Amino acid sequence: MIKTIRTHWLALLSLACLAFLSGHSHAGSKDFGEFQVHWSVFPSTFLAPKIARENDLNRSKSIGIVNIAIMKETENGGLEPVSGQVEGKVLNDVQQPTFLAFRRIQEGDAVYFISEYQYSNAELMTFQITARPSGNSGELPIRFAHTLFND
Image (cartoon, rainbow, N blue to C red; front, side):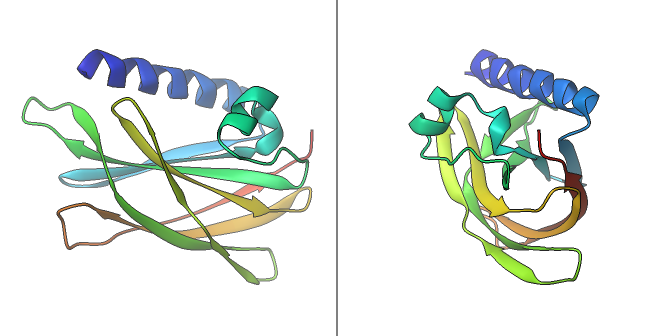
């Protein structure tokens, strides 16, 4: 189980590193003590057509993907994914909000939440997202901004 989680996160980390080098995506995390919220944002065109079809995602130069994972610290200091709820909105550069419809995806032990959103080339988008881990009444709010560019 731990090996599967590490493999999944190493793959995501590799993708995030490649994306940073290209200047098109954004990834980060915020620590809430026992929990961490990890996020990444990238153009839907980064997805291989097969992966997009398997996950019912649209590939387009004007569609971005936001990916959220809720992680919990284990007794040995590692991290494990947890389920829960994620909701939020994205604001464009003139502060018009679009509510995000997150879908829960589970691949083996990995759990993450994805949503698509519309963007214009070089438009600054501000994300306001709240994660609620299962079994915990607290909210984990995150806020970050990113600009995507068409391929």
